[in-house]
Length: 360
View 1 (cartoon, rainbow, N blue to C red):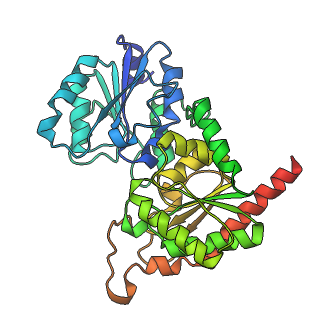
View 2: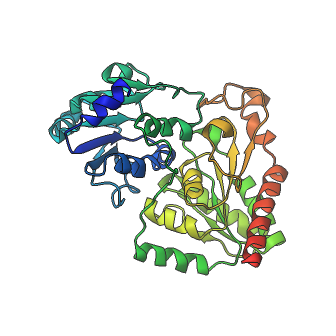
């Protein structure tokens, strides 16, 4: 038995803290760890530590006993109440999936006898851990990287399941919204945090129009508060292209749980590499994912039902938030990722969905 396994078996505290990533996509990719942790420590209460804007999927999660949320934009000196709260929890084990200076300080503040982190840790956060999980560096696909935690705890043999707890009222709302559109239902999410990830809204609209004409698809536009104007622009473009067809505009109108419930009802999600893309995939909704500055092999969802398309320019998968090129080469990845390539991928997914529905 390894030294870590021996110390884990000696844990007497009944609380486990897990510091989740800052992004929605990171939170979604870490969801399989929650049932694995409760399987490994069935008598312990699992406490999720997460930023306020990404706490929506966890607040009613059946595996989470409590959520401790924090504001990402606060200065560190404003975090004293948070750090005192974490210290008071008396965790037997703390896991930091983010690995930044702030999350390292949170991890250290817990005073846990065992503090686990990943090899992607930066800003000195690794010095706050008692143990660093091996083979969890930046070249390891993110879903695999997070699952290394389960493997280090001795439960890596379990099936990876992304559980999302959705109440019946929210499910009914989503069914009502989806039933107002024709099938197959194509959901579109044109947003992303980085400018280098955002394929132009106009191109999304062209692909959606082709899906309407070829498959008779219904279309819904999704997005958070930052995508409200993009959603309105998308609707205007659709009205210009196909005036006789309406689009369901839910941009800025859904919580994270409502977003999850609606994605369960969709036949396909077309999106950039973003949180909703990974959320849809975790709910077994097929996705067409667009990857420009990120890599589908490292950051993409797993599964044969998805179509992941990558740009082929020299700087693709560079993970740069700002385009390194100027002049005619500025954001060349957006031009390289053509409407025809994306439309072909959407056609493939919708055809499979229609064949599956007929077979059922």
